Length: 474
Image 1: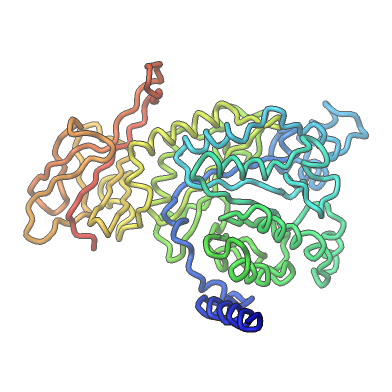
Image 2 (image 1 turned 45 degrees about the horizontal axis):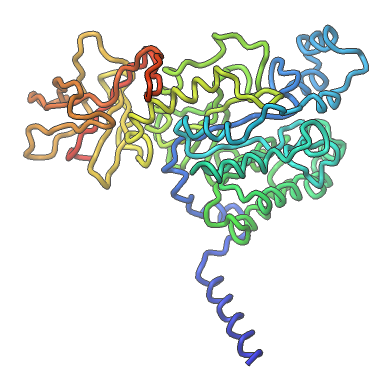
């Protein structure tokens, strides 16, 4: 009987393996993997840049490179004015304290933003890891600084207190790592660094934290063959604990941007303005000059909520996801201006999210006549959303793209997020003289005010949306 049991188990294993697709370690096979549906439905995520660079919090998260790599004057002068000559970048690490870091509080803020996933920098180009990496001795958050596994705290709080999915950012290269510099000097004919550092870290992150997004970055001008990216991705898609849900980006080597990977990022702040054939993501940051926290930032450097909503709407209309970045402080706080923007976005999505989440790009992304009108659609519901970012002074809106179903002279537009008391008016379809009844979707947001049992809303956000049902989607 014991022998029969072994045979039965083996047969069962073979049947399970034969039922799924086996991805080979080459781009033709890997690029054929369907993107898990959850990612396209999510539309909106939060990027978090946090590390030792949050301590000087001057200029940019590229502080170390600009100071000692390029020796830019502003950074050199900053260090001369504020630190002794013998001070090294590594001396910032003990000051990365995270004493006010509360992963549950972060989770509450991210959930309030309306985001569906987050991406945390587990290691930026400085090489410092936010978990106790076995391959980053004494240059990680467990050995020095907060002496805590920050990745685990974020992952645990996220899963215990929200429906947000976990994404992990990981830099392939490190600016000043001697092994990487040796490989680069050889023209990447040697691969000491990825074998000893990059790949072990990637495998450890996946097995230990089971992220749904693996956000790779920093190829160091080396091709994917140097990083053995296809080998890692084949394991990720075939054998990892997240093989059925994980999504990946396109930053796996100098030859991969906008060409290979689960979804494309192409460049930072990528906004093509038209529909792409491949799923893409616009990673951008609220502070227009830095991804990490900057003490020397000015108010004008931060995008307004109107600008952020506009970016979200355009991105989703063109088939992309928006990954909006915040930079926490060295002591673990999300600065009030970042929190305000996140909560404002959540207020807008609470009312208008039906036009964003689970939508698809329509045949037209924007209207040809009325400016600042973007479209999304839900074909399964025969619904089109028109999102108007600027309300015309004369109150008249003409939409030229929607086409009334044959034989239909008018239709009711259904409000999203408002009750039957929503404002009413007339909306004219281009090319059709008849007017149709419409209800405004969304609302003008007011100044923040304290009202018992009600969250404050915000001034001057004039976005309006219509859901036009039973119209031709083609």
